[in-house]
Image (tube, rainbow, N blue to C red):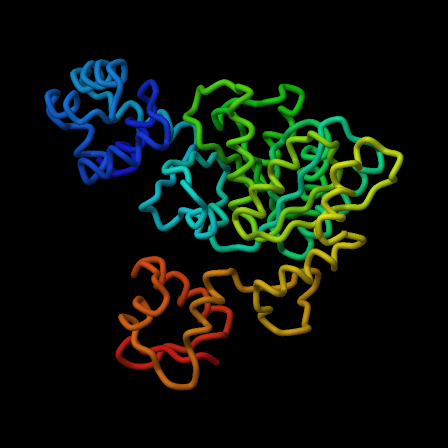
Length: 366
């Protein structure tokens, strides 16, 4: 049975939050070993609460439970992305206490683990000005080949997703519920379109209903996935400001769209500008910030409407290469990447014409 099935099985137990998942792996070495741990060990370890232990024991006795779980997720087109998976987002892994399990629902699109991404967020109670700004900026980001990340909430989030989709780009929605639940309900059509042209992401198992405490936690994932967060409109106590705070903690760029000083919806964004956030007057203001974190494939050159950029991890690997060949094993030590991850990055750099493989698994920059 694949490792991700055990991750999902443990994650579905009552009270098994991310902290408990990490403790289980630390104690038993893997989710599979935790799943099959003797009952005495489970009770003495102090990792799981009584309710979770009782549920685990009953499920282990149920023939075919793991296979049924596996098939159900496959039928729902939900991928389970775990911390030990090559698909796990590189940037998200760098934040404090990243979610050990992610659920990714999509129709044929792989997860954007190594592609440029910008969060576009804002208040639910927005103005026509905010809707227009979010839609326009998101469309132009999508045209530049940037993933637009938001939370599919009413207002600014919805406008951001729709703008990216209208431009034929890719967008991902991070939910505060299971990936199979449409929230808010009026966004069912948008949910389906996002599944077709991007994907739905959640740290909550399928079937989990939205709860107030889920959304602040969801916001840390939105900022953790991106190189920059753009706040379009936000009141003084808007949840979008929580995302901006997480972005600052994660070392991400925070940009804001200036608004009228008389508008309550712009009180939070204007305050962010006073505190040092960069104002956004056009999409180039965002792309300029990305250019400081990414290297363009051809500096100053655009291909059609798409600006090719290198991801953060690609840039980090390229920085370790020059004219003198560097061996693959040495690159692992220099970059801190896992062997599988590094292999994928080097392949991408070769396809982009930035790296050449020499004999003996040695690499040089072009």
